[in-house]
Image 1 (cartoon, one colour):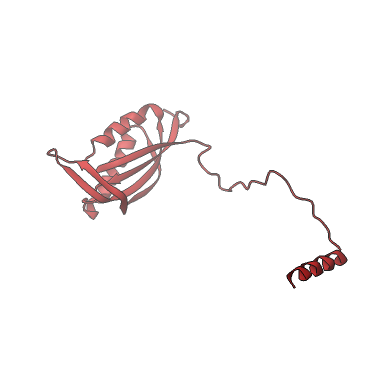
Image 2 (cartoon, rainbow, N blue to C red; image 1 turned 30 degrees about the vertical axis):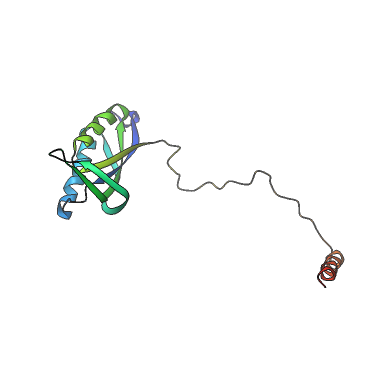
Length: 149
């Protein structure tokens, strides 16, 4: 399948915080392998880093118990993948017990900022400048001073 049939996506994921730091790279590689085995190509990524969560999350663990976490490892990947393969990839992510939660976003060309930001001009255009002579300015200042005195 050529790249013209593929869309660009971003995957944000949270991993359970009890993963040993030396095993974290393996867990991230598992996620990358899920993308690649689904026919995707990872373009950019940021490795998982420990983050405090805004609220506590509970996750089903083996044995039918629920574990609660208030922090997690957060990471993201941008990748290209055919739209037909996204559901296959998500099904594989759901099977991974280390993944607390994930979000896949389809990045459109309009959603990806260009290198230079566009500066928008005000709708009304420029206001015409009003010129005031020194004599009129002195008169207005005198009027204001008389009002305050």
